Each structure stands twice: as C-alpha cells, then as structure tokens.
Image 1 (cartoon, rainbow, N blue to C red):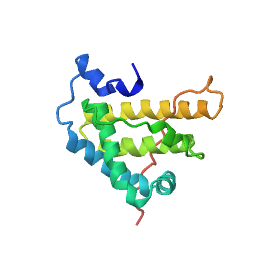
Image 2: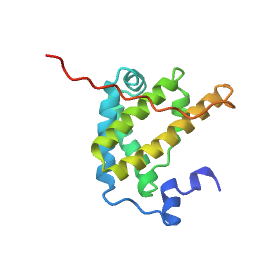
Image 3: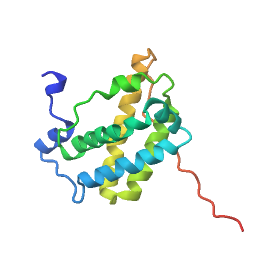
Image 4: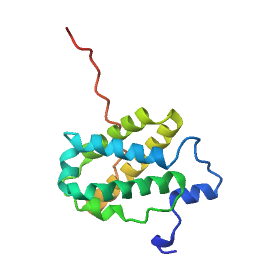
Length: 164
C-alpha cells in the first residue's frame, strides 16, 4: 500500500479497539498546539530555529497543519497527510539539544493544560516522534546510528524562590 494510502496511526489504533481518553477533543488539541508554539517561538534554544524557518505570515497555516497532525495521531481524524521529514531535514543545524528542548517544552505545556492521562498520551507520542525524527535525520546525514540510544529527557530547571 503506498504511504499516502495508509490509514493514520490514530485510525489504526481505533481499529484495534483503542479508545480516546475522555476529555480529549479537537479543542484541547488546538489549545495545546497554540500554547506550545507560542512558548516555543519565545524559547532561547528552539525559538530562533522556528522564527527563521517559518515566516510570521505562515504561522496560522502551520498551526492548522500541526493541529491536523495531532488530531490524526490521537483522535484518528485522518486529516493530516503531510510529509514532515523533508522539512526537518532542510534544517542543517537541528541537533539533540533542539529535540530535547522541544520535548521538555511540549511536556510542560501538556502537563499544564491536560488531565494527567491525556498529558501522558501526548508525552508518550511526542517522545516516540522526536526519537524517530532524530534517528531518521541522523541516518540521512550519514551519521552512525548503530549506537544511538533514545533521547534523555532534558531536566526541568530547579525552581528557587525569590530571595527578599
């Protein structure tokens, strides 16, 4: 079956009896996407990459596409039919630090917005996707991936109270 004719991961999960967690809907996905990318664009590590690669006028369409992606992944909507790897391959300076920061900010965002079971689902999928992208990009760059392990979570900064 050609790749573009394959059902989405979400559709496949629904076919085998996977149920959508209660409360997970299109509105929640859009809220997560909007909040995460607002945060990511301001971040000192990944913000410069996003702001260099995606023009201001392109952000509304990008957010729609990413919402479609997560809707397909988690709700089985099948709306996303893009090919994200070539776009990521075109970013020559994309490195582990960027994947780690993306994953940390995404995890923080979903944990702030979603109930724990839904946040865990978002995090699990995002970590799989991040590791898959990282490995695929490294392989296509000609790196030796035989010893490559999964990304480790970037530690959250230690909060310290203000000292008055």
